[in-house]
Image 1 (tube, chains in turn orange, yellow):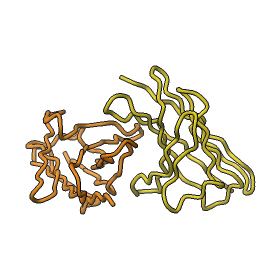
Image 2: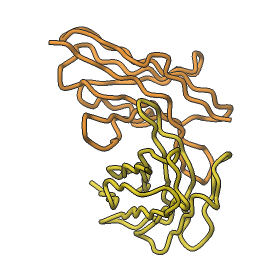
Image 3: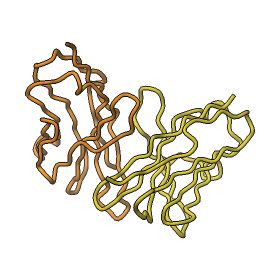
Length: 110
Length: 113
């Protein structure tokens, strides 16, 4: 079964510091991985996906199949980045369902 | 972007009663919708996949008689918590896929007294 692991419940950094939110996955096939973000009092929304290889709000994530990781990185954290971040894997079959990690709360201190 | 709404945003009910939560895709059609449950400070747990025109697919450990799902149209799925008990109190979130992206509703806070 698919599993997504986010080892850190809380990550606290100062403004301007680099950020890395860890995500590891277990999946026997070709994974489709995503990062979702939930800002305070807002709904969950897509931040980025590995297949598009894009940078959103300064965040990037590279799929490392050797390490089965999909860590989220940003070189200089901003206070407005404070939010809950969820790594997710999509079922490779026809169901389209997402399996979420436990989430990491990023707190950026001024 | 695509919008998914949920109604009500919060509901308080007595133990033993049933509660219906609606999930609507406002500007797109969705043959599939998903229902999640989120406990405080925990992740989203997928409960079931709602399929338009057919039975829902439940995840292991989710009681289908307890959580009734109906996908009545291409824009509406409902989750009914039957004979609710305090342990059913939680945050229920739905999502609907459009192309390759899942769009999430704002969630419904259910409190069972």
